Amino acid sequence: MTDKTPCFSDIIVDRTQPGVAVVTLNRPQVRNALNLSIRHELAQAFRSFTDDKTLRCVILTGNDEAFAAGADIEDMSRIGTIEMYHRHTERLWNAVGECPVPVIAAVNGYALGGGLELAMNADIIIAGRGARFGQPEVRVGIMPGAGGTQRLTRALGKFQAMHLCLTGDLLKAEDAYTLGLVSKLVDDAEVMPAAQKMAQHIASLPPIAIAQIKEVIIHGEDAPLQTALAMERKAVQILFASRDKQEGMQAFLEKRQPNFLGE
Image (cartoon, rainbow, N blue to C red; front, side):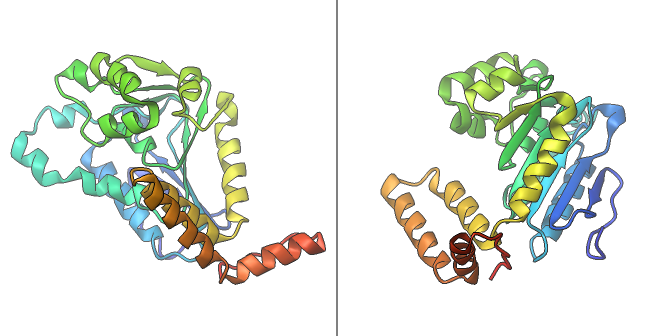
């Protein structure tokens, strides 16, 4: 952990790996249910990453039983409309979605409700075969409220999103992978090793190129095609001014490993 990393009670932030931060949800007694405290801590942690020039990738994970089994129902049962409004939890999730470096969600067990919405704020989802995904909010009289209806529709299409949100049914990891919700499917015991291997690989690549790829994919997704293609062209042109472009191509020609500096 670096000196700039705040201390937390409901999450653990590990900065022992060069260029990689591992953020672990740490409420195992309630399957990492997402109360207001853990949401604030996640937002604080991810905001602290924004200006960290040494950071290249983040892994977000839970434990073997649950990534996050949803919102804290006991907490939500006690609040009304105005308090719910004043919480502005969308601002807290935005801190994860707007992280400037790639975020890998490493999912074992349940990723339900707010847990699935949190995972969908990541850029890559690696899941164990025993993982389960779903938006079961309708079963307790509400609906997804942190992006579930919108991100699921963009990831899976209208009919799969309707199915999951209207029924509250759970999706097996194999089916989530087939439908495109999961990036990589591995054995349960291999989720963190696979996430760490991928994070270390991303951390070895040119960070400006990585940042531009993430930015163009995210902002181009809902733009008209010609606008998105223009955004892509401009990003490529920017990269041609970087030292890392020169280093990468020179290393390729010289048949050696490149040394990317983020310049």
